[in-house]
Length: 115
Image (cartoon, rainbow, N blue to C red; front, side):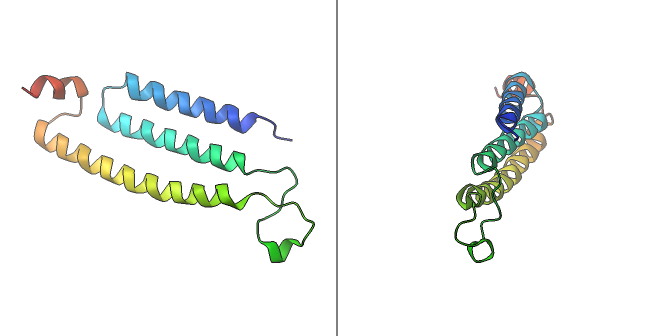
């Protein structure tokens, strides 16, 4: 029914994140790009676990012969969301320290001031 549309969206999000990482000079925008890539990976995991006509992966509610979606990618996605939250918090705290030390968020200016 949905075909390959989620995988196409994953590719677009991942590509947009990579382009932003390599093209942007502001550290906050780079952090947002890393978050976009993380969201693309989460969408990819959910799309891998999708089954057409599948129900929720709770066995006692579904019955023996009912087709269910795969629960493992859902669990991996929840884990990845928690890891991405911690990584983003650490990244933003490091960006705050860089701003306090150098007074700028521009990558080229920070490289120039490194001395």
